[in-house]
Length: 330
Image 1 (spheres, rainbow, N blue to C red):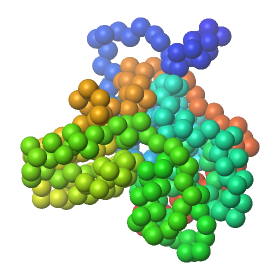
Image 2 (image 1 turned 45 degrees about the vertical axis):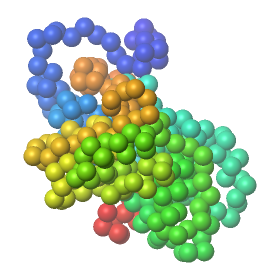
Image 3 (image 1 turned 90 degrees about the vertical axis):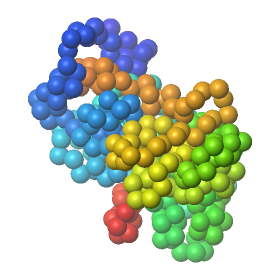
Image 4 (image 1 turned 135 degrees about the vertical axis):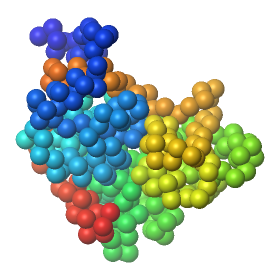
């Protein structure tokens, strides 16, 4: 009972860990014992990325969660991602190292308010970005990620009216790319809204040969400057294929670990934000640590659960996304 109370208060299991313990070796041992798989998002700490069985963006992680044969899915990411894994694999145990690893974008779209918003447009199909709660997914017709948003919109008839939420910046970029008139919910990601156009301009002047690459969750004024706009995976692939030796990266700084591993001869510079911080870390993503990950697998908690009725409703739009993505070869 005390452990559960502490979990609710802190969001994670707190236990003393022997400082001489090799956490990498212990985690590998526990994974075998419990038939567990670690899925990690690109925005996690480098140590977590290095111990993960699969690293990816939201689309890749959803695909992996749907097909894994592990008994336990340990999700090193944020809460909505673990919920998505539970929706796709309800019979499996889904663990999240820290239950308070939330998402500013998901928080910007409360389901009860979105339901009222949706009622104003009864003839519109609802596409929601995967960065939202399970309850919001249950109110949707199709879920998308930044990897497949454009293609999903383009797969629908041109006269189909669409509500797109919760990210207004991604929605505006998708509308521009597809030429569709989307009704947008006014939500945004705190990390991607903080980039400074003025500071990026100065940085580009200091690095004239650098390619500026940006995630479509960034504001339009920042995207206008970009040499390439794409999902986290898209940015990684572009940096690998490009002949450029320097890149200014406008997304959460965690992806730079994979970029540097793939291209040790190239330089990656985090795009500067409007505040005094030199980096762009998502405080929610960074709540997960190697220590919390170890204790999470060891104790089999914190566990992420989703009510059965929400699983049933939310599963349909996610599966529709996975079907469309498979048909398009994404």
